[in-house]
Length: 225
Ligand SMILES: Nc1ncnc2c1ncn2[C@@H]1O[C@H](COP(=O)(O)OP(=O)(O)OP(=O)(O)O)[C@@H](O)[C@H]1O
Ligand SMILES: [Mg+2]
Image (cartoon, rainbow, N blue to C red):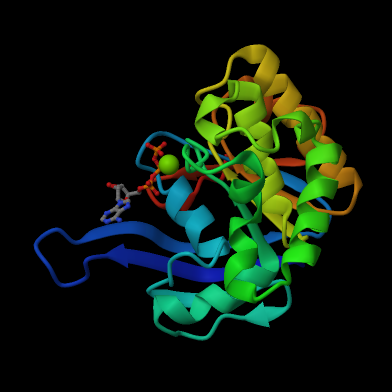
């Protein structure tokens, strides 16, 4: 299994008045080169679950093994190193910096890694060609179309060539044509060997033929039908 969670619990603001138990003893296993959808009502814990798989938050208890590495119970900042090598994250609103060029947005995750400018340009160029956004290379990202922006976000998630791609409600702000296009790119990435986890309740995602499994999430637990 590429992703394995065993009895993972996440409590935000533990011991404080605003304490929230977002996940309760979640166990799940995701095989390599599959595409899985996490589906559930608002507040059920989907984004929290994705953030734990994505090494953005540390869990409160339980075990997690991501790409062969058991995540020890460490402060959040120690997860960063593992995350950079393993995870490509596509955020709901894409989290693109509008004043930076398309090419600079894509290469952002490479900056802390000390990759040479030449190697950076090559890698960014390759992805811009692959995702058909080369013609927007020097445009400020704030001035490209919704579909182009979506492909910039995908290119940025792929820049480190991570084995795992995570996308949090990626189609929430896209029309149906762009949503279909997004899913086609994800299907191609799965074909190319990536493992993909998407949170969504959009039927264009949950019912897409390339989705291998829909996992229900309810009240911080896996919803067994
Ligand atoms: N940073 C945080 N601090 C405190 N509580 C949080 C935080 N993030 C989420 N929560 C709470 O944890 C619970 C699960 O939230 P989460 O964002 O994982 O749900 P979700 O299923 O992604 O919802 P949505 O469909 O609305 O995006 C909610 O009750 C939420 O209010
Ligand atoms: Mg969410």
